[in-house]
Length: 331
Image (cartoon, rainbow, N blue to C red):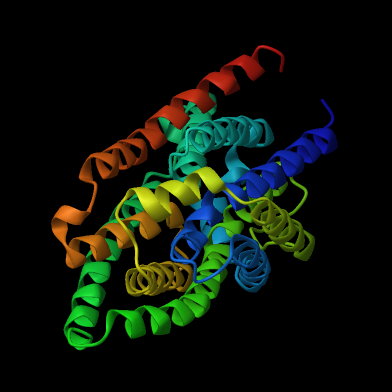
């Protein structure tokens, strides 16, 4: 098949992935502010859409990390086909978990799928072990950091406002949540939108249409727009899980969770590390809930979410490997 057609398929699938990521993952970013009624669903989605777009346009470090750390696109014989298999597997997993309201990770899905497709095509030798391990470390450590910081932030807020009126506290923090929801949506754009940018750039280098992993402006604009449009659709099933089913969130808890997760994601972006915004936000909520009252957290549900995290990379890797092998029959 003509290389330009293949690259066109990659671009279409990558933007579809970003669109799905918009309503799949951004639901996490606005769940607490919607559940505490700090923002109406419509206003939350508008703010999230705008801030996702702005965040996506301002950074490219994570895109370069995605584009070159798992494998070297310039050395792959069928790099564009690998990317197509990657995106098909990642999109399938995202839609499946969205349908069941499971806040799984689009980042894990993409990284797992890319690794699986590369191994299927090139064997283990095709994987850049060092770069892949660095990304997996970031994906694993960031939720633990978010849980710990969320616990500490909530514990400090409890000490500071121990003698304050609950009504006044909720009123003040409900206002503060508007800012933290906007900040969280911004950081989501800075990290998650770059993953699709990175995968498109990976394909462009593999197709020998450009020599470096620098992200073209049109790729940034397309990915940012796709994510913003996806965000505008919303993800109500995941909002319900994140905002109401883990524990009963009040404005002070939502504020603590939002500021914690946004700070962790922004730090990752500045250090060019792709992290799972889903994992970070969920872990921050769990940390905050534990500080509020350990027994208030529905740990059985949290356990199911963690299981989804653990299985995402291996399942998507296997799925992408199978997709690539099926494609190879026609190549």
